[in-house]
Length: 339
Figure 1 (tube, rainbow, N blue to C red):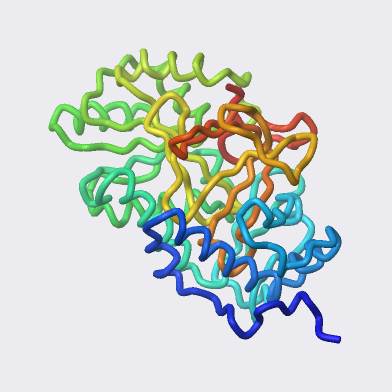
Figure 2 (cartoon, rainbow, N blue to C red):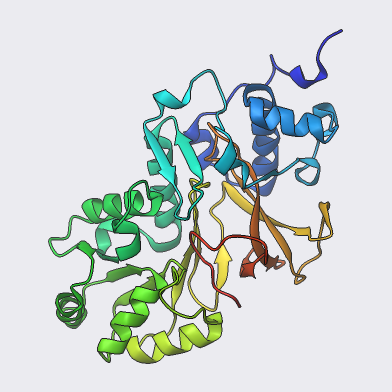
């Protein structure tokens, strides 16, 4: 008897990353997501076993709402690989912080590069227009950070002679921010939350050409703050109208961005769905709080359907907010703010 989990094995081949990043409509996203589902349920043994354990027949998965989402904890306990390759062939292995690390095996680093480059351009325009200053000390102090990989590439691609990383040399950074802003240079200051607060406490800025983008997380260095309180402090000290944010994590190869008030938007190849915390197979209406499920089609070689430990709510325009984390979840990674 044929295995129903081999459903459409001859009809569904893995789309190219350029096809996935070229999505132009919700209908196209859903069609490609279902294609990726059929590929991964066939070629990712961990995901296939998970789907089997739920007694889900892949032939009945005909909409985004019927796709099973893999708990993000599997990245800590399993090697999530889709296709005929093995972990030793990975071009990159991204790891999370924390005592028990998630490990994301990346077959082709170019997939990640194409995703974050196109995602940044989608929201902010060409990186070559910016001087990129990265204040990411806790990430620089360990290996395997996908955020450091992205920041390093954006710094290099900006081509600006003052772009670079900063660890604890706040005085140099203060001088550089003032100089660049006074020259009318567009600047992206990408910083982990506690380091941005440290910088803001050292100097009162008045920045007119600078984007302040926080990546979330106090890393145990400071007391957690609600988003409104945190952003109010940063507004006042940096002299800007909005605090931007990046929503990303080790387990994803794409990022969502917020240009203020903690409201995030996904690039066209990524979407967020809000699951009922009491019934993980049901989804909530707009403006209700639940667990964040992410579809990231750039995860073409691992698993594109992730049930995170973040709490959030979505809105009718496709945006979403991150409101915190499940109480039983370890605090690590990006965007741990309570809102």
